[in-house]
Length: 201
Image (cartoon, rainbow, N blue to C red; front, side):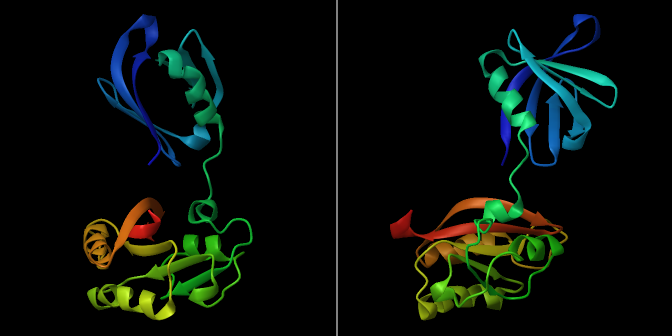
């Protein structure tokens, strides 16, 4: 989801351009009157002075007027993004229950440090849906297992995926009394949405 703000890009010779900054785990996307994408690994010397944030990337100096939010943007730019394990809530030795085959190595790696236990004993439940039948069966499975806490549903993302997408998952889950509360990219054509029982929202 990241951080987003309107800003003024101050270019060479003081030329100004109205832009939107969108900070994600992978880097900074700049759109508007000027456009650019800067990978997170590229920037250094991040500073804020008089409401202007500046950094160096690939030999070029970037300067953005952000006013009172400049200091917060410096913190965001210099703080490493959370790992996938942290996003899913399994970074501190929590237990996890998994239903379905994990689709990408990124998810395998994120769950490596979590002990696998039955769903009714787990801190985190992760389910993978690859078909409409698997999706339709989820509410019944949740009831059979007595799951009443947060669950992560891993589903398709984008046109290249053949698995049910977020819209289909949301329709089934909401009709069964669950509410989507958080989204996390997983890797490739896969994403994950966290659902909570309506009474726990």
